[in-house]
Image 1 (spheres, rainbow, N blue to C red):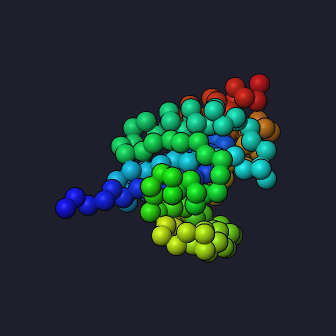
Image 2: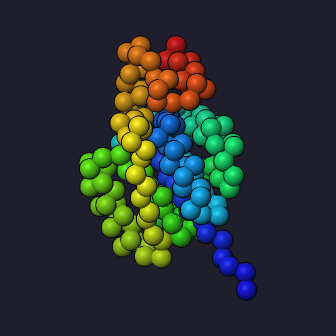
Length: 162
């Protein structure tokens, strides 16, 4: 009997996608047969890029990662994960503050669907301080963001700010 394909979902706004996100994607892709990057809107955030722009950016940045697809979603995460056939939600952790929020979200998600596990990956130590919000703030004030994003994403941000 053939084993069932292991599908994971890595959700986020990716506004913009950072080296931290890419680290979690590359490492997370090894844990599953297929990793679905779920690009979503977040009503509590004011995005710099449209969903379409973020989808294009993420697709470009993960084009070399086998078994990864990029999908837009605007629903409850657990409904999206169920539609994708996922059994795993992948989340990255940078700091204790992330853990508290993510732990609460994992608990709520488990109440919604206990057939889908949440798996946390610690961010690489060198990438822990990176947050999309801070990257945008640095860029808006003319600071260099090349330590936090790929050259193509840095160019996207610069173009958006012009």
